[in-house]
Image (cartoon, rainbow, N blue to C red; front, side, top):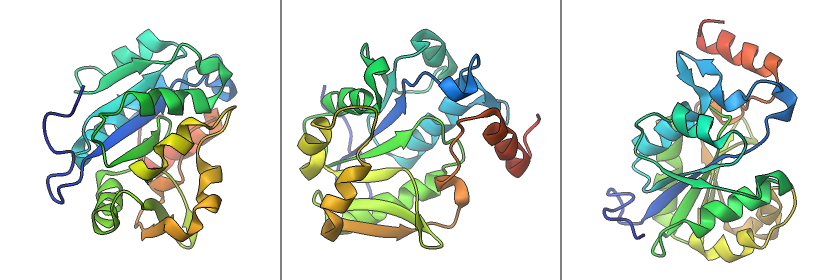
Length: 213
């Protein structure tokens, strides 16, 4: 289905978002990290909410492991939920599932990891503003103190290559192949580094954000 409104009204380019939320959360077992509460809200809902606030449209959430629980955690957020039946085969399958679900006229896509609840709307706004200047051949990467983080905004130019990736990896390998197209975007928050893989990661995040244990 095509988007019914501009993804980024500020610049005329249509930017969608793909939230990868299908993983097995094996390092947090038996808990599902995406369902853990930070500030009273599930981690995956923080990520999807930031994507929605940025004006990206549509916001596609790829589910897999405990799909029904993840969908329930999103509540009434206006996202498109797309199940990935082959999620156990690795991250690349969820990336492919999300890309296939994009509108045909999307100029770019923010690829967000579902376990990074400290990513802020302002981070996404900065990436989208940079993308507006460069267009669909750009790859916009957030950077703080010389270190690259996530999410990454990929121009539609690279969608076919991203869909060809296999195994339990994302699109990071393509950054080196297209280094000349990478735009580093300065970000003022450490949220672009804060993923939650383990109980200790979660505890650190809650301490940093002042959330209840």
